[in-house]
Length: 88
Image (cartoon, rainbow, N blue to C red):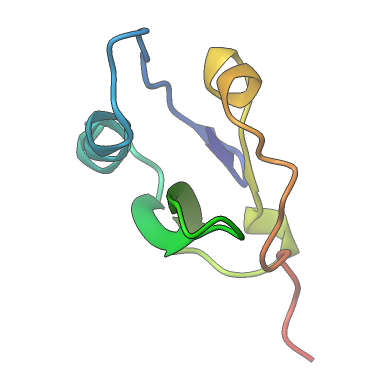
């Protein structure tokens, strides 16, 4: 994860769950302001769905969160709910 010029790493394994990934992100000793959460809902077939949501405690375009490595490859982080922007 990178927020602004600060980065930190989280190791994810094939046995991790959304809960454990969220906890690893939130508890990382060198976490640079990233918070992870899980939101639930249902799809068109009324099946439960869960999504990992990533946010930054720092604001502005300069502090946009970027994700790389195996975590980015495992999850589809292309669905941006709210892009970083500067106050006007």
